[in-house]
Image 1 (spheres, helix red, strand yellow):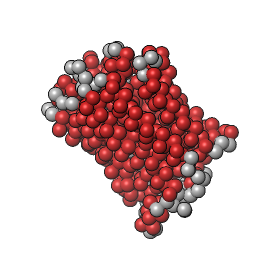
Image 2 (cartoon, rainbow, N blue to C red):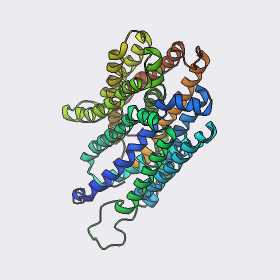
Image 3 (cartoon, one colour):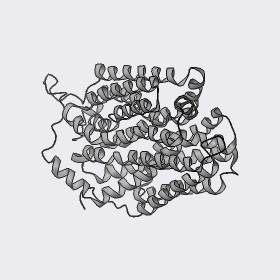
Length: 425
């Protein structure tokens, strides 16, 4: 993906493109964690258990992960604008099916279509931002995009819980589907794939890039890279455990451990994405401002994240509302820092001409991690059981111990990250 020329970097239309993408990306994160606060509604509606619910929720991540190489390729072939719009329409269809679902099977289908649809947003966005913004601006724009996305995750906590309680979860998802469809149409109607060339009248001004003839060779170089697999494994573990907590189990866990209502529990859960909103741009700025080694920064962030899981397991019954508020906020800050830092490492160690391809091949890793950890933790919680509930503190403790183990493995792997080119080792 060749960077845009300096002249094109000043094109004001880039802010139109970025704004519309942000509106769409808001719902990517919203859907990522939306099932957490409506767990009890879904259990009642479908008469199901935690394992089935975990599988239903995880379908978003399985399909999202499988989607990434496809949308990366198509973003080169037909342009990011069309991919983002068409895939968002699919997500809207998934919302309608989810809202109408008469059974957990239909809900799973709806969730899968949502995952497929929103899976066509991020990788094409990486390509689009690389066209409209300079290399120095790129990381800043990704950080801002993460903040907008995580605001969607905030709305998927207390505001979604309020909407589900007052309107019902089904009408709420009908409304979300309608807004998503409107955003997809807006993307097609008012945005362009890239800045115009020096010859505005050229019919090829907005044509998508032709894929490199070295696509197969670049793909082999990437997947043969030790650096690539280290980054993928860390992404799998950290993101997988983080979203398994925030996106599915944080709210019901707080309800059980503190014996509080869903609204208060969802407010505490909301502190995780609020922390991400602050941590993502902060850790995107910090290493560049003070010339810090990003690999060392990644290890520090991973260590703090691991300690947060340790605290949950060791003192989960003594933290109280203030303790969990502080802990969840801290987890959010370091999760945001992790995302900014690891993408900074990827950007610095990946040749520009294969950045999009690398992103498309790498991006399944974190979502496969979420899918795996959601199902695994759901199974553990189910086996532990509870008095009249599918949840018990012992079940949560066992499930979260697996998350702690995953974080520890990622911490060890983070010390092996080196400043070398992905695909060059």
